[in-house]
Length: 96
Image (cartoon, rainbow, N blue to C red; front, top):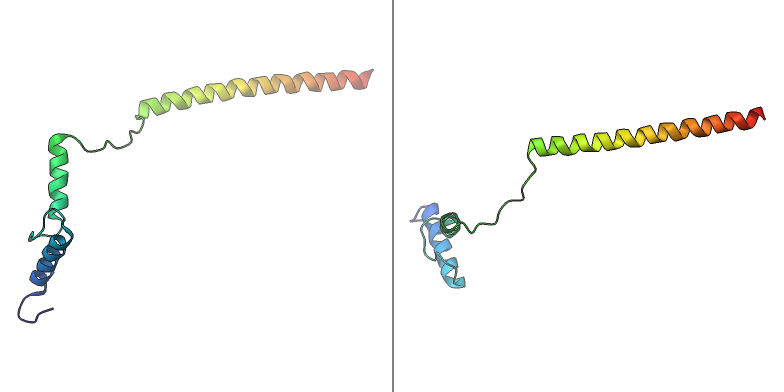
C-alpha cells in the first residue's frame, strides 16, 4: 500500500487492474462488484433470470394436508376393524 493515497483508492485501483489482467467485464471500474450489478440489471430487463423454485401456496398445502389426514383416517378405520375381527376370532377359538 502506498502512503500518499487513501487505502480505498488503492483498493479500487487494484480491483480494476485484477479485472483487466484476467479479462473480466467491467475492468477498470471504480466500484467493486459493478459488473455483477450490471449483469443483474440486464437479467431483470431481459427477464432471463432463473426462476426460484416455487413453493405451494398455503391453500394448496392445506388441501394436500387435508387429503393426507382423510387417507390416514381411512387406514386407521381399516386397522381398527381388522383388529376387532382378529380379537373376536381369538375369543371364539378359546371358547371352543
